[in-house]
Image (cartoon, rainbow, N blue to C red; front, top):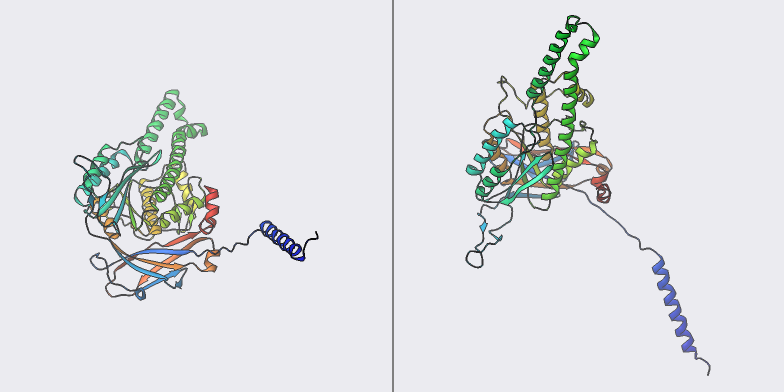
Length: 442
């Protein structure tokens, strides 16, 4: 029996359909990727008495990137919820639950970081006392506070966010530290002691009578040179560990919504910055610094470094806010700290304070220094997160192609505004524009 024409056509159609599906399977699908980079800028606006300026509008704000005005895509005034939060009662008597009762939206979020790595023993005692007083007297019941420490091993979480200051006080009292950091005066004392010992040895051998002998000069100066090199090595280690701790902190709290005030209680931080664009010290790539600041900004964390050394002796007219001579290159300033002569303590302090202020500027916070009332400084940092404005705009294609530091400036044209605090810029790099590249680097 001959196959019918209908059967032949059916086989032909089936074969064509199968061949078409095979071609589709072999041809990779085209993917169109579009990425819009949104720049988020939290802004704190205060009046004459430091109070939050409420009810401002988008038209009152002007955001400039590299001197060019940017259209604000989104504007929002954030006010923290003042309703107290407390733990729920257990389902049965004598039972415990971690459920929290209360509206969790828009809370005042504070992260306290006690920096053991960059703090001496003496300064730590003062810092602990101030922190305990702040927790016991200044933390409001609507404020969520978390406690972390930084030491030679990196970042450690002591307690997660809680509204119970008593719990944090107990946790802080139980914290211990590792090896203490030597301050500049202690380093100089060690150096002078070794020099004196060498002079005694030389005097006993009779070599001290020939002070112009190069070998004698070298031997006398050797302890100073060795100590300076050791100090530079310690500082390089401290820089790397501190930056890594800040990155880990940003990763840990990035998923927590809202602006978070990081109260960084520290004795100093020695890396040098030039015009907020060049960073070099400790043998680290500038990308490490850039990524650290960008991670803090992306996590909506504003740094509030608190210099726990208090008032500087003999510097009544000292003002760390005054403009600095930034004409020297980073290499020159770094060499100053690496020189064989031990750096002057006041010179080191000035560089440290300038750096802490720059760290705050990059994240929209504020640095506190040259003051003995650390409790007031910490309370001020907390108040900043209770009310603020959130501005966003889209990064233009031209700006996205320009890697490096992008300067930001936020101004407010409204009567009564005294201070506008926002981060001074942001970094654009390959990792910023290409998240996949960042994951590969990890």
